[in-house]
Amino acid sequence: GKGHTIVDMEAILDGTAQYGFDVRLDNMLYASIVRPPVLGSQVAKLDDKAARAVAGVVDVIKLPTPQGAPSFQPLGGVAVLATNSWSAAQGRAALAIEWTSSANDSHDSSAYLTALKQAVQESGKPVRQMGEQQQSWPADKTIEAVYSVPYLAHAMMEPPTATANVTESGVEIWASTQTPQSAQGTVAGALGLEAEKVIVHVTLLGGGFGRKSKPDYCVEAALLSREVKRPVKVCWSREDELQNGYLHAISAQYFKARVGDNGVEAMLQRTGFPSISSTFAEGVDEPSASELDLGFVDVPLAIDSLRCETVKAAAHTRIGWMRSVCNIQHGFGIGVFVDELAHKRGLDTISMWRELLGPDRQETFADQGFNYGNYGETLARHPVDTARYKGVIAAVEQKLATQPKAKANQGWGFAVHRSFTAFVATASLVEVSKDKQLKVLKTIIAIDAGTLVNPDRVASQLEGAVMFGLSIALMGRISFKDGRVEQSNFHDYPLLRLSQCPEIETILVSSDAPPGGVGEPGVPPVAPSIVNAIFAASGVRVRDLPLSDHFSV
Image 1: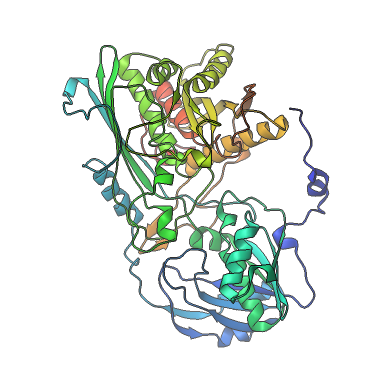
Image 2: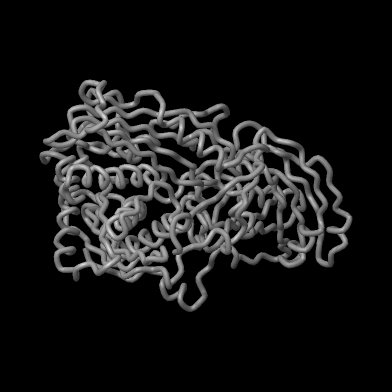
């Protein structure tokens, strides 16, 4: 319950802390790898003469072609190994490679999203039914909307980096990894060793957000070290990370509600996105139950009829979890739709949420067609408690009451979301000028994460979550053309700049409940709070991210 400085703060500040790129071993080689530009393509023809002629280049090695589902396998391609990173990069640039065709050559993210948005407006597979299915949707009582979020990249500051030393006695790995157990097991499997013969040294991450829990880069380093019988460091470039990483799924959601004099009488919602499961099994084109539990089927709405459906969506790239995972799109969809419902009902958004949440209770979702996973926790220990939803709502509402009145062309927006067993409410103030310049002025964010061990770090995580959520909302998009990612670096996949960052005020709600999540729950309500604020400021309703498509940010 007391704030403490993190144990390695001084080392981070004075430069002695070790990140993945800082690892240096005797006799070490640096590897720069050209990976297939389209998922599923392979090296058809290779001319490496010019690469081998670069000073410092020691070897050029073709990596094995992955078989089956991507999983955590390396993508294949060609590695240039050199005595220094510059020579490795120059040798890589000198490679002449022809690639085979792939089933994903025609993937166009714009066309894919258009089809996905159409699909969610048609009948889907039911995954939750509360009450009787609504059959009547009178036009004067019905509101409907479709929301979309594009592909997103993790874009952490240090791209994936791993150093491996394979010897007769086993393997040592130095890596910026979030899951050393997974790195150990995956490397052992790739090299045909017992897990005990793989030792993983964990460096500081340089940012992870889920990407560095996927140890394909550790396997690359180990395979190359075994081949050259020397330590090898694999350093992904920024371009590699954006174009060959694991992306957050492109998605579309459909919401329809019947609104009566006394509130929302029925709601229908559908979601469609390529599943993370497609990374681990071939032919998967439907979301898993664990993905639907992330803000789609688990919102405790107190209405008579609620139906949740899914639609099919095939994967054309590696899909992976990213900070808050499917709560990103699901929190955005429900967060904006509730704001639209509020305007239909003539209520403010906070009052609309209280109405939809209904009486204080602990929702069990019994007899509704699905078994709630609850992030691996029991509902007895971490209940879906509407009173705790209302607690963070009230905390933000009280803070809003102390804020100056919004000026002309300004507006506040609100959203609330539960994820990773924590409850978070967010209010944002934006300004929209007549020439469509958007500026986020302030964000207030409150969390009830149960018992707080180190409040200082909780507040820092919330601040980081706001920045992460703002990057997604304002500018986040990875697009595909002819199967290839179009973005390559921060010039066309920008992150939040200091000039774009609002004042951030955090509220830590006191609770004696068991500790819940902190790092991820702050992200989902940020984007909808911004979009709802834009509507309050300008009357413009945005349903498709990023906001840079609609405004100058």
